Image (cartoon, each protein chain N blue to C red):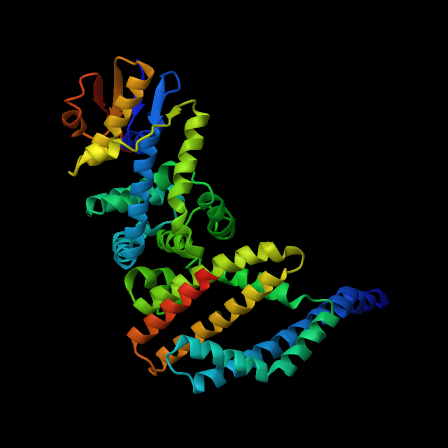
Length: 229
Length: 198
C-alpha cells in the first residue's frame, strides 16, 4: 500500500525511512516545512538574546557540559531543550539542521568554523555562528528554500516520490484552527489519491492528534510513529 | 679547533644572514605599522563620541593623515618581497581562530569561555559576535584573495578593517567609562550589522 509521509515524520524519522516501501511526500508537506522554517528562523533572530542566554545557562551547569561537540549533536540538543522551553518553532528549525545536510550552511560551516577551529565546536561559538550566518547578507531570506531543496534532493536520492499538488483551491476550504496544517496535508493526499485512482493509503506521522483530524477521511489510515531521537 | 670555529660561525650562516635578517626587516616594518595604528586609535579615541558613523569617518580621516608614513612602510614591505594585504589577512584569520578556541586565559584564572558562560556580560557577548562575524568574513576573503585580491574584495576588506578599528575604539571608550554599557551595546550591535551586511 502506498504510504505518505507527514512533516513530523520527514524531520524526526529520517533514519527510519526504508527504501523498500512505496513512499510519497506531497509538495504540500514541503510547503509546510518551508513555512515552519521561516517562522522558526524569524523567532530565532528575534529572540536571539534570550536563546543565547538560555544556551549560556544550560551549558554552564558544569564545565564538562561545555565540551566541544559536533554541530549536529549541538543542534539536536538545542532542539530538545528549546522544545521543553516552549520554543517549538525554533526547535523545528534546529531539528531540521540536525537531521539534514543543508546546502550552503554545511559547506560554509566546513570552510569556516570546522576547518579553522577543529571538527568539534563549542556550543556558544556554534549558536553565535548560526546567528551570524543567517544575518550575513540576509541569508535568512533564502534559507527556508535551501532547506526544502536539500530535503527534496535527499528524497530523490532515496527514490521517494515527490507528488506535486496544485493546492490553490485547497486553501479556501481550510478555514482556521490549530490543526489547519494537518488538514491541509490530508486534503493534498486526498486530491492525489483521487487524481491517481488510489482507493486506500497510509499516512505516517509523529503527531498523536492527527488520527482525530483524519477521521472524516476513511480511505486514509493514519499510522502514528514515535521516533524522536 | 679550526673545525669547531668554522662550525661556530658557519652553521646556519646562510639562513640567518639571508633569511632571518630579511624576516627581521619585515618585523621591523610591521612594528612600524603597529605603532601607526596605535597612534591612529589614540587620536580617534580622544575625540570620539558614541556615534559609529562618526567614529568610522574619524578613522578614515586619521588614516588619511598618516597615509604617507603608512605607504612608505608598505612600499618597503613590497620591496622586500612581502604582500602586506595577504600577510595581514592570513595573520588575522590565524589570530581570530586562536582567540575563538576560547581557551585563552583572560585573567583571574578564567578563560574567555568561562567568561562567556558565567559572566553573561552584554558587551562581551557583542564582542564575541563581532569576532565571529569578522572571522567569517576574513576566512571568506582569504580564499578569494588567494592569488591576488579582486577590487571588490579589497574594497570590502577596507570597510571591515575600519569597522574592526571602530570596535576597538568603542570598547576602549566603554572601558574608560566615557560611554555607558547600553550605549556600547547599541554601537557594537550596529557594527556587527554592518560587518554582516557587507
